[in-house]
Length: 277
Image (cartoon, rainbow, N blue to C red):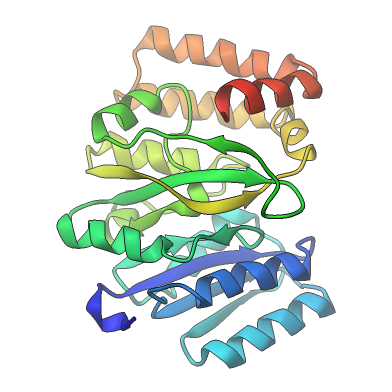
């Protein structure tokens, strides 16, 4: 399918040394094999990589051509800063996010671009994910987010309303709210709060757009005490942006503290059985 049929867009990714080369290779293949391929891929190397990762990057850069832009950071700066820097190298209006260990469904970008054509004023178009362990056929859960703008604005009160690796973002609106920031593991949630506080139009598609790779350690990382400082800042931002009431802010603080305190196994069970059905 021709790139020219739809609005131009870029894919923005960040990779660091702990990524497995096989995961990065599968992720990039899923981008290159889309029904609508991006005009450019912006890959931020967040610090020095392994030999195997450099080999994968070189292979795909040669395959994709001059639209494959590699941004080299001398030392690891974290996902928020890496994406902030990578955004500067994007030459298109639309930015599709992708993580280097996830796999996009073959028509992901086509589905999102059709929505862009219907409503070019959208700030964010996200979608659903299913979660897999090991093999892509081993689906262990899904993270379902609301589709309508009204429901998204309700959802952000308690949980992140977009699946970050699925989103396509309007670059102009991204820059207007200050772009990505380094906020620990919450750089995306902070961004959604800034965008929704401005009242920008947003949607999620009902379809699964990305197969998200998960591991049991993910649920342990969500319970790190270091996350709390950023969580409290996020809840305060939601209140100042009039996205939550004072009561909702405090209730959310309590819930987030409880999430950190509970044992990792219980947290994993809650996410898999309740939050990520």
